[in-house]
Length: 75
Image 1 (cartoon, one colour):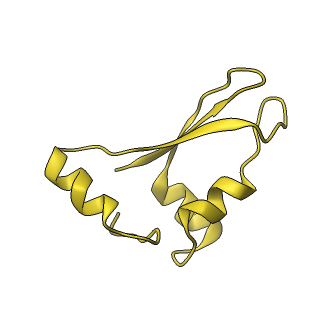
Image 2 (tube, helix red, strand yellow; image 1 turned 90 degrees about the vertical axis):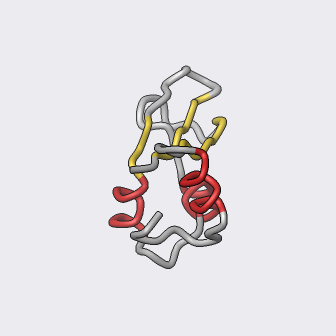
């Protein structure tokens, strides 16, 4: 399973959130950019953070996942 990483620039909080959790929250047709814009630190409430997609698996799996432009249940 792949994760989204949000590192808050204000307080340093850095959760890894499973992509599947974001799909359940925002729906399978949402984009990563939509999720990033909506994100807010659950510790301090700020919207200033570094965002990363963390791919799990081999490099081939990561490349295939990177080819998707929308979040889906298969990513």
